[in-house]
Amino acid sequence: MDKTEYVNIIEQAPVGEPERQHYFMQELREIVMERSDKLGRPLYANVTTFGCQMNAKDSEKLLGILEAAGFTASGEETSDFVIYNTCTVRDNANQRVYGRLGYLNSLKQKNPDMIVALCGCMMQEPSVVEKIKKSYRFVDLVFGTHNIFKLAELLYRQMTERHMVVDIWNGTDEIVEKLPAERKYSFKSGVNIMYGCNNFCSYCIVPYVRGRERSRNPKDIVEEVKNLVKDGVVEVMLLGQNVNSYGKTLDPPMSFAELLKMVAAVEGLERIRFMTSHPKDLSDELIRVMRDCPKVCRHLHLPLQSGSSRILSQMNRVYGKEQYLALAEKIKTEIPDISLTTDIIVGFPGETEEDFQETLDVIRRVRYDSAFTFLYSKRTGTPAAAMEDQVPEEIMKDRFERLLKEVQRISAEMSGKDVGKVMPALVEGLDDHNPGMVTGRLSNNIMVHIPGEASDIGKIIPVKLEESRGFYYMGTRLP
Image 1 (cartoon, helix red, strand yellow):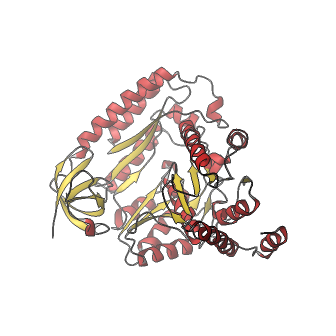
Image 2 (image 1 turned 135 degrees about the horizontal axis):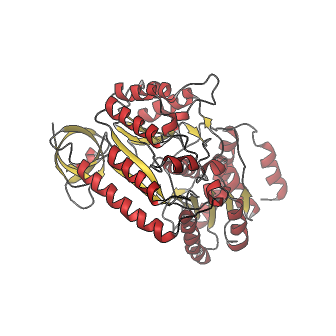
Image 3 (image 1 turned 30 degrees about the vertical axis):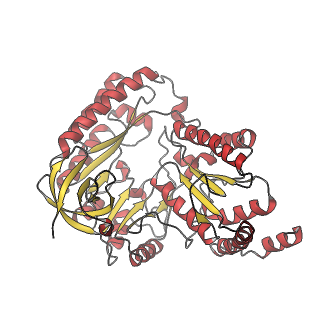
């Protein structure tokens, strides 16, 4: 393609979205088909996801755009285009990506025409982008979280200009609808209801890399859910960094509880999940909707982070220990069959043994079904990174082991409470370890293994819970 033709294609592109991206998908498709004809095979692409369910949902969009542009999904080693959708919530997430980049470099040396792309949260850190430019020059395309929707346009630029393309946005108010997505599951799907975060917890880098809160129009959300149901989806997961603050940026504002009722009204939808919930924004209205709506699953992930009011204040969590305990008690009183899970950080700067004991006290009183436990990870640019009294690593690890032991003890005690009950389970897949068995997910998010076959996947069936095996049940299916 000569320079004049390239300039003409760029100049003729629509300005508005998503029309502009659909235009570039078509232009990119012509390049892909031309190269495919020369090779005598399809051009293959691979999307690797690091991090949270928000990233997983973004990766479905990335793969959908690539397939619309003519690529065929394949494994990493055989692909002509490889993209890593990165996470930076903890330092070890960054290190995993750097480690994998060495492997990608070896693949590219064998296949010099391979295109390597990096996107997502890690790319929003200026120091990371500079390191990529300096030390990983084989990378061809770099972009962040705010312009995921521009993949087709950016890849078109890279494949025509043949040099590293870097396009990082510091923020955006734009939400682009109606782009293709390739779902991982046919029967369930995540649905973004908002983007960004306004909480600025002192340890967390997410607001800096995901930007300020932006809520989707509720009509667009409901339309997406309706289309998913038409396509065979029976369960949706409503996604946001803090779903409880949904709607505050809309005009007029609306609450997450109101949105939940709108989604629940979609005919044919069987189940609704959501995450993540910030305790400070969890309203009585939402608790009532969860209690009264049978479609809302009996599982709530309610991050604690610390049981010490002093540490919670330093974390800028905007609630204290007693406030959290009162909220958990209210939820359990209103919804007795609810399953509560949480996140806990050990070793936040200044944490004393007394603070740690406060955390143990909360988990003993709330009695979570399970908990995700983490060592504090220092993230450059966050207020906590500059705090004094950073906890020594050996103390952090000791507390982490004690916390994990207590969490596992309580989880084991909680695990058998539903033995003998009959509950509906959504069959999600074959049991890899037991032929003739399938794995289902209960409303409370606990797994159950039952007799079944591949044709059961995607169906919701009644199951009697016969035996607890710790973190899952063995069950029998009922007619």
